[in-house]
Image (tube, rainbow, N blue to C red; front, side):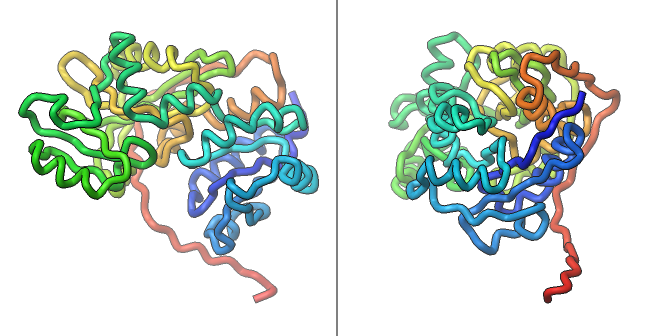
Length: 322
């Protein structure tokens, strides 16, 4: 099969160079002439030097859909990959209008995105469904005298998280947060589950990986592994959320299996590790859009495991205009 893909816009591209490279590789396996446009509101975003082209985008609050569609047409952008939690709700809401203009967005439906972005709503949903989701409350008194975790209810809670606090210390920590959320501390091995779901919400494949070293909420070192029981449990939970495309679940491994922390409805910061063992999330996302209705390539989980180490890299660019 061959088919033109045009340009793929990666929004909030920032310095997400491993993701940019993986997206380009996936796109060119479908269309050798495909290009990646890095979009960001920061004119000095590092990604501008590694993408095929750069688009300095306005803040979402100032973005007009009509103007945006016209700009996409000029750049031959036919597919958009959002990469930041804070923009998912916007793109999910804008998807119908964009798809009517021939622009596909790799994002889940608005209700599913909203559920994943609100950690309290997600915890309540899990409890109501009888799923192993760690409970959450807006007051520390909701839990007995146990060590607590305090984080932001919305957004990247790991950047301002307090772990293993007494109720009194938890309250003090919460005073510095915009929308504090309290949870009981669950101990065990912290893992991420990268997964890809079809447009119909079916889990097509997933990979477990240990978060060996975490810096600023993201895995600096991560190792893939297999566990049939955990894989089945994760697939069951994810299949109930109405998600589509690439997602990443955060969980703690306990005696009963998974204790789920949250689900991010996007490609994760270290999800490139799972690409290395066959979870072809970006390729499948683009394949669905290039050839709607065509049978998806099967998930071929490769033998052996990988350890991914994320390090800074110096890149020298020879530019005749410098």
